[in-house]
Image (cartoon, rainbow, N blue to C red; front, side, top):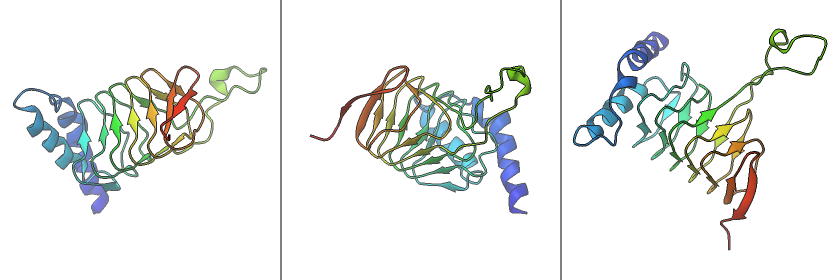
Length: 177
């Protein structure tokens, strides 16, 4: 019965609530932010307090998604349904997080016929800032206190408190003094 309840809210999110104005819209934005939160809370495996699901955020079924307190999914982001997001995570618009990739190892078979790699979960720890249009390759683990600059293609993991940027991603510097 619980699964039916979750799919009921998922249906309404995907057909109505996803298209409501952004939370930054003058006067009405906070109300729509609250509506999206109320709709998504029963869908997710775990949803903390003060979570912001922005306009056009897409998370698949969301049934295994975990998002902790004071975190958000940015405008027009695409995240896998099993992502784990810690506390105080800021996500800019148009962030894409992938959990699979195409197989391409066998040159005798067209890539389109080789299928996909196995699914790899993405984990974003506490106090992370993800800039606009960041792309995550499958299996990334973003450590506590990290900053990922706008337009970064995150293709490897870094230590905590890292400032990361570029394509491919490189360490710019550590936030630790």
